[in-house]
Amino acid sequence: MSLSLSQRLVLAPLFSLALLAGWASWAEAGGAGWTHDMTAAMKQAASEKKDLLMDFTGSDWCGWCIRLNKEVFDQDAFKKDAPKKFVLVELDFPQDESKLAPETKKQNQMWGEKFGVQGFPSIYLADEKGVPYAKTGYQAGGAQKYLDHLNELGKIRVARDQAMASAAKAKGVDKARFLDTALTAVGDELAFSVYADQVKEVVALDAKNAAGLKEKYEDKLKAMELAKVIASIQEEFTGENGDAILNKLIETEAKFAPKGTTRRELQMLKVQILGTMKKQAEALAVLDEILAEKGITAEESLPLLMAKADILASQKKVDEALKIYDTLLTAQPKGSGLTPRLHFSKGRLLAAAGKKADAAKAFDAAIETIEDEDSKQQIKLIKSQLLAEEGKAPGKPADPKGSK
Image 1: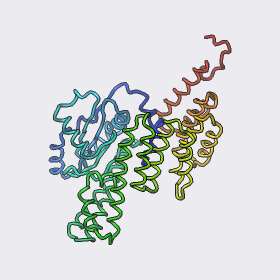
Image 2 (image 1 turned 180 degrees about the horizontal axis):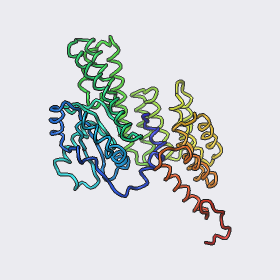
Image 3 (image 1 turned 90 degrees about the vertical axis):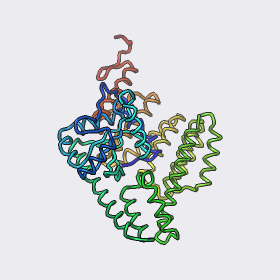
Image 4 (image 1 turned 180 degrees about the vertical axis):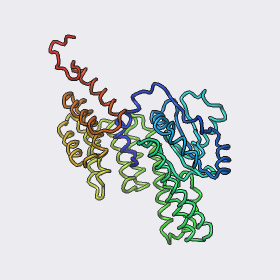
């Protein structure tokens, strides 16, 4: 499941648990079977009729990159089967840049900018010319499951190439439709970062919007432009220029008139800025306005409700905030991946409110329902620190005298 900006901001504390653990050592994917030279890799792929598997990684600092190496790339099953279909390329962005030759650093930066890489690990599957058709990242489950995942992604190239071949033989709106099929296959992220020429061609071929494609892609281009404006506003916000930033958000909303998810992204930014300005009542009003919209899904409303709970807690309305979490937890189906996140966030809220015993219970519930062992261990550590603050050791009664 992909996460929107607002979801990432709300759920980030739990997602980062494994990263907070600290890694005693680092390991790069590059080794036997891997290359760091894109030019050589493309020549090899063309010669051997293989695709490229490009690993954009932060080998000595990125926790998820290290996990991917350990759980997948370093496993015998991957080492045996992956090179049969892919030329493996590592494009590293280490904290210690002395590990890279200057030309390698320049090459990695160029390809990272070309693909618009925003995070690590980013795994791209590309053809022999270096044109990507699929993107993925860390996937739990080990080497064989990852290989199966790559095989599924390989079907995207088949769909892309078939549509592109048909487009090459067609003209006008028919060609636009085939190009649209190819762009849909690779997905919006790649379509608008790597296939920009094809996007422009679709708009030009369907200039009268006979197939609805001109409107479709212009709307998406508008959404991308809005995303850039929002990112710029976020960077400009210092915490002390809140009123000016709010005015810019109002102007942006008037200019772009965003709808649906895009509008909610803009409103969530407004909530964050209002919260920073200690204008909790106004922030709550914006959240309630979004939550009252027709068509909002349970998945979309979850981060909004969590944000509302945090604001209520900051206003000392802890009971109201807890009701929100309890309602969300009750609504989750058995085995939901959101359940441990909700328990953990509830625990953080309780801890901040000074309700340490209840917080410990919430953390226990998160531990019982989470599958990731690293995150589980981190929650246990947080719980232990919480109990230590109360003068208690896990499993032992508190000493009323505070003696050791």
